[in-house]
Length: 454
Image 1 (cartoon, rainbow, N blue to C red):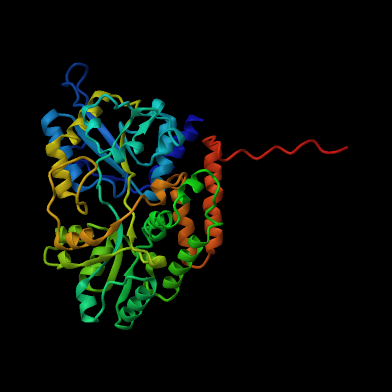
Image 2 (image 1 turned 30 degrees about the vertical axis):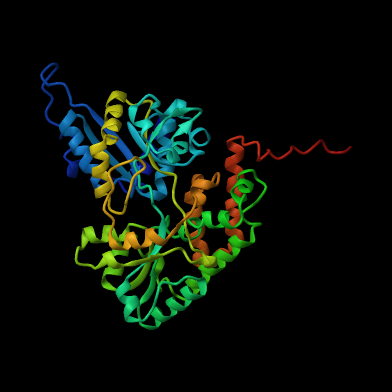
């Protein structure tokens, strides 16, 4: 069994995209030298390893890790996995006791206790000073039975919107659409001008389904109590008509070619280039997308790019995340005190402000910090936007837990291999299976058939 397990881990390692940040950060492991006998070497440096999914560790976090090593002598290395395998890799490693000292996970208010037992797998952080400074809206994602197990350092106004190159819009005499029909008309005009209306990074398949799932707060806003019905198993996804109508509109855009002819080959890294060059006019990204573009290309003009809410069903609301990549200390870490020291360092006021001001797309943090100056387009949008509740991932049970399956099915639906009804039914069936495993009383187990009649 041990050999089989090692082989399984080796297969995972070959599948993941593992980016070694340690060398670039100056925190890597030293090369192996000749053995000089007992007592001939100094005490090895203290080290902690962090594992995360791609996109969760910004460059500024690497810079903070370097500063932490300089201050404490404790080395920090990062192992970054491709999103479509990270969830499984983490589960496997936690079950085997071989996870890193620190692991990140997209936590929601149902993650702890349902998908992971924090009392067994996580270092208890309740008595740490910084837990009293974390904004109250974020506490449900890091708490279980009155104890705190996670650290969130993430953008506090992180919403997903369509960003557009205003130069293209001005040249074509267009304005930001306010209804679904206006959005379709805008896409048609842009396409006729020989420009791809929407850059959709289909190859980064975690992204594609966001155009639907980030609209969750809109459905709840229009039908108060919807989330409660979904969370108590009194409403299914497949049985809710507005979900089907929104998906039909998304597929209409795909069929008309408004995402481009081969959008499933596009990567998230190409979004900036597409809008800077004018190859595409719009893309779905975070409110601070233009900020990250300007860091790469200060002359791009991105400070004036416009934004509008996801347009399906005439939507005008932007969902705001209250769940995010969360830092957990592994209860089986070989140096838990080093983990605690690292978390204290990250949550220190000066380091929080550095993170808030230098993160590529953010405008504020889950901790209070000094205000970060907003770009002109951020000021304009946030001054007029209607910010709503949480998207499906944070507000509805058992969505994030099946995200890998959701993104795969959504991709199949986008290319015509799956109907919206089948997609929604798949979401329901997986929710039922996850709820049964969590022994959720709202999803009673199927009754056993009685004895056959004689």
